[in-house]
Image (cartoon, rainbow, N blue to C red; front, side, top):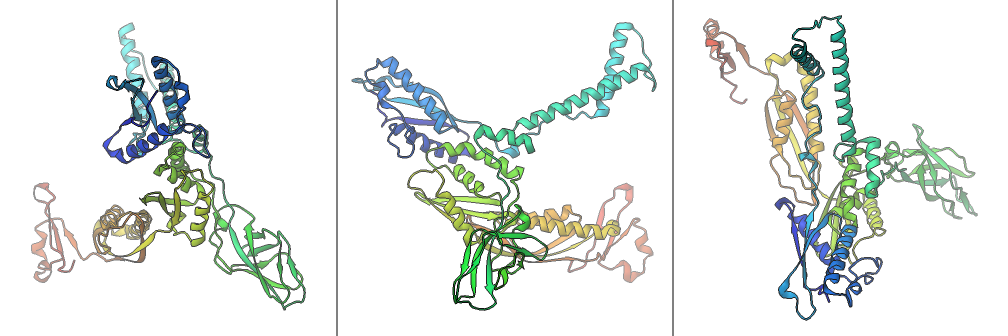
Length: 525
């Protein structure tokens, strides 16, 4: 017989992936120690112990290796069986204790993968020059002479044609390789990779809103609101009621869920009360108006989100509920789920914190919707999934900056760039668990052209794994520079004494062409 209770799992992997290694080890121990047919809901999970009964030891070993290898590939594709060692000292009275070693699949972080470039740094001009050089070299070696490469010569035209064609082939080969690899594939090419792991791009979703229909006066009989009754906004975004409803006798109103005619984010986030034009008149009904903001309108899933889910997809076949599997399912609920954080500190209770597109905190209804979605997901028995909106940590931005005198003519453009940089920082900061980093803001505004940025707030703030930073107020001030440049040291002596002694005078030392600067700044600058 083979003893499954004393098996040892050895996993090899980078130290940076120890969390993933532990996760895989948990999954494999569950798989290898479970008799096949004992797991409710998935009778194929586990190892079949009956195939080893009454078999010679060499045959039993071979069957065991085949069984473990096949089940590992089926239920835990993140790992593969490298070898199975049999401990001689443990072969006693027909009891065999195996020791197998599995290895992590080589999954690299996308940001560490170099870009594909077959031709290297070679440009078209360099390709042409290289063709000319090779042609001259071989012509001299073979014919001991030179051929004219004047502008209208046949040889030159042939070389240009070959160089252009070669360069085009290199570009095409690079594009083909990028289309076949997950980190660089986009559009339809990415759609072709997805079926390999059983994933499909999420389609656009239609927004929903609650519409309240109101009677002009109470009636003694019920007033029907037909299914498909249309209500629109002032800018003609149409919604239709999902089902038939009635305003009961003596009542004045009834609330009905309506769905947008067109899928997409264009119908999402319409404020309460803005869906208020009754397109299909109903006797005795005086009007209709939305009593909730529209939600659920999503565009077709973008490449970034799709790539992320494809990368996570193999984890859903695991039997122990790895973090990546919950990441995959949370991202698969709706295409507008922008950020997720999986927290498990209480045994089998899984807490999922998430943000919607644009960094929006999910509503209570959306948290409930994702939680109900997880009820339909195949996951380890006993796992309790709870979905939450992250806690928001407010921060303020108060920034002043200058523009170099040499760039004053471009002041308006630089100001626009600085404002855009602040907006980009706000978006960058809006990630669950990301600490508030003022240095990141300083770097971004400097790259936008700001000089001497002075940041009063925010300060470095630690954000926990269930929190997210939220910009509360923003004040960015451009202060005109009070500095002048004198390109010859001798000019300072020619200035009026009261000016030459001012602390805001900046002297550019031109001695020996060194260009060294000596600066005097305002005391409060």
